[in-house]
Length: 129
Image 1 (cartoon, one colour):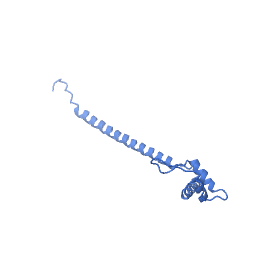
Image 2 (spheres, rainbow, N blue to C red; image 1 turned 60 degrees about the horizontal axis):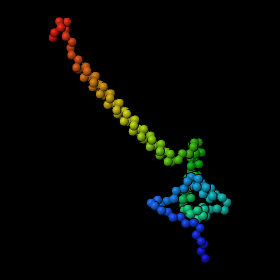
Image 3 (cartoon, helix red, strand yellow; image 1 turned 120 degrees about the horizontal axis):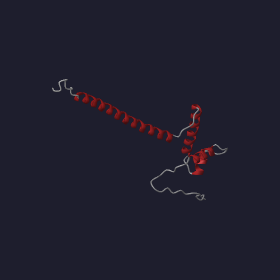
Image 4 (cartoon, rainbow, N blue to C red; image 1 turned 120 degrees about the vertical axis):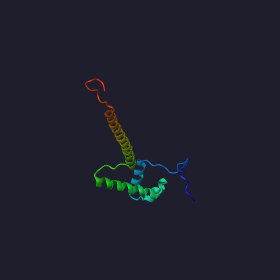
């Protein structure tokens, strides 16, 4: 006799993948480390692919090792991408302002040259040319 289905998840819309919060991932990975539990058993219990759980375990281990090696906080990749985008935007703005400053400097130099060229010789002591 077959077991009754305990849970059915229907995925609607365009999104095909489930999203797991960081807390859910940590909870599932910690569950795999309990005595008598295997990654496959936890995966079956929660309807998750074993390879997904293995990947989460590996990332957690690598992140911890990297943090210890660097003696720094581990930063999320999304935060790194966000900051890199901000740096690119600031570099773009700096380049634009640098170009504007160069254009203004050249315009000022041209104005000085024209002003100097437009100076007419003043009339002599006799008053007429």
